[in-house]
Length: 368
Ligand SMILES: *Cc1c(COP(=O)(O)O)cnc(C)c1O
Image (spheres, rainbow, N blue to C red):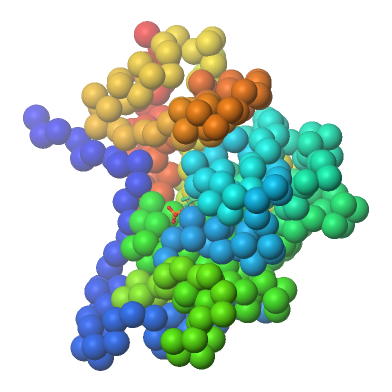
């Protein structure tokens, strides 16, 4: 008997168009930031619906540069979610400011109802993380930002193309995207800052190139956060396919939720009102009522050739690096989410047979 094909939790879709685009850049010899980066910036800004897009070399760099562009620094506080990839917190630490973590709601995103109580004299910005591809509840967040005069730096590293009340994430405040290979679109490594704010865009462009406006004259401290034309060439091909990728993710998610409905102790993801979900991850909760533990389910799926992932097993405030910085808060919903979440393959290369296999495997395991 032949082993069934392994279904991976992520699988970047790199085809002939990407290969050809990279070879074309290589033949020009212009490998670093150049015309392909400029073209990707123009097309990405048009896609998100912002005046500016500034390409950088990672999502982390995008977050760091965006925070600096708003003047966030030592003594400041930035309100964000602890149930995220470590970069959401670390990018704040890089500036010398302190991330203040607010608990999440049932949808895994920051609980907008808890944000106001966390605002202090030191608060400079709110960083909503649109986790797994679902927008945060942006209306109350934007209202608080206006009321307290706070910057909004959106962590859009998982939400390329998702919308809240018909508006794309990354266009409410300043968006910070990642193009890491597992994300909804890729440039290899890469990132993008999207904004309508001219001053923030100008500052971000300086920060990405060692504070240099005139060649070899440096007025401010900057970094090397430039994207390569090789990466941008891949990104242009990927951006053209982003909506169809997201549609496939959505269709896979709908099929998974239909197939997994009614299993005791397994909660499928819900899409909140007024928003679209681009399913960077399809994430279920494996509660104590499920027949086996979450971690045992991971193992039993792996035995059946089905990859899965726990995003994230340890919330940021409980990571050793944050404990060592003196973080000692209790975030019950965040900690419960970390204990219960399991992400199943949903990416565009997952087909209907794969979805059926995933559903059958979980049903079989749940029947003992
Ligand atoms: C991927 C990711 C980042 C960081 O992006 P990189 O390109 O890996 O630096 C930040 N925040 C979230 C939520 C992410 O998923």
